[in-house]
Image (cartoon, rainbow, N blue to C red; front, side, top):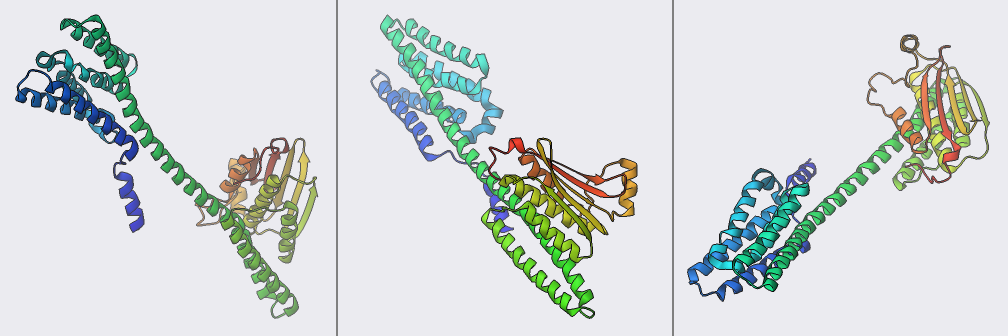
Length: 401
């Protein structure tokens, strides 16, 4: 709980800009401040006026940071027009005192317009600031080459400040995206682990339960067979342990033929009549594993939710698709009644299992390889699960996650 609360606090805390990008922006602002301070110091002005000019430029830099830093997003959203107006006043009014040399502040104002305004208006603002600074140079009767210098200087400094500000924003967004991708990868791995545990252990635990019940019934009348069933339980338990380790390592290759043979043996041990018919060539690994998982989950649900006496497992090629079909009887009367009212039903769940995820897991696995899953009560009262996988789409697939 403490770890979750700490994670929540970190998520709520504003994320600082990466130091390198932020350091470049601060260095550029400091360099401009030094440049303006040197330019003001050579003017024949009183010290008070020079200090006032430096204070004004510091205020411009503060406005620039408000417009640039990702942490100030809420301030920009609420007071962006106010800070832009203040910066415009600090850009143009000091010109009356310091003359054309104050034109260095124009680039900052142009960059702020690009950051705060949208679309065409941002570039209209930018061009207007550049032209206004050229107009200031003309008003103070500077030479044509100096007018051009002021205009180009404003143009370049505006683009530079805008680029540095966007650099900080993009780096922060990149770091946030990397964090989100890491969290997504963790969430996907947790989902995979939970899904595989459900698919693998659900079958094994159902088999252990079934065989243990058979052994209990036989322990007095047929001790030899009871020992055989308990030996089988031991083997299934070891396989379940192996499955858990396989899930933890991330690989879960399974064989449909092997799974069908295992299901047949387990069901026959419970005195269930089983008919298996596998009519297909060797399957690609991804299809083999996915269909074996579907078969395992279908048998697990069959044992949990039906009083099954007969079961049929078929695998064949249906045109360009490979089809797995599992049919069983013993569907509860309540389920058959609902089927007559609403038609096909999803795979039934036992009481208290509203949050079960078996069918959803299988649909996810099949969808990953272009397959489909249908399951429901048939008109004859049996329950049918059909998985279809197009073999033509499997050439580029390696595995199912």
